[in-house]
Amino acid sequence: MDINLLVQRLKHGDSYMAHNAEGDPYQVNNPPNSLMIKAANVILMLDQHLQQNNAVVLNLQRQLNDLTEQYETLRNSSVATTPSGET
Image (cartoon, rainbow, N blue to C red):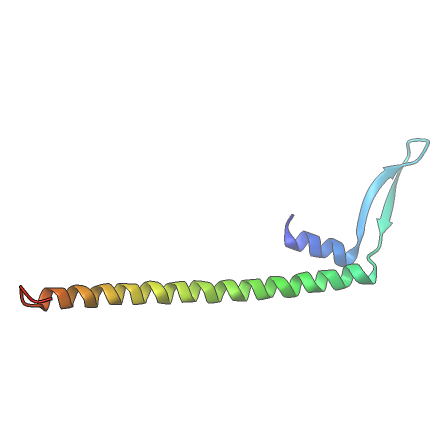
């Protein structure tokens, strides 16, 4: 379920069509209660934290990749400049 749809339903309630005994349609409205509204706010807050954490992880992964490339470059250049026979 899309988080935005879930939050919208939690904050604003739900409506659906039903039929009475004669088969006539009517709309049923279920308004939100205070717990549903609080849950929606918590979900939005957690979603924001997850997005921030994901951005941090991606940044750290990029930094790790950069450092790995720099290490390999440095290692390869030191191996190339070491005279043969020395370790």
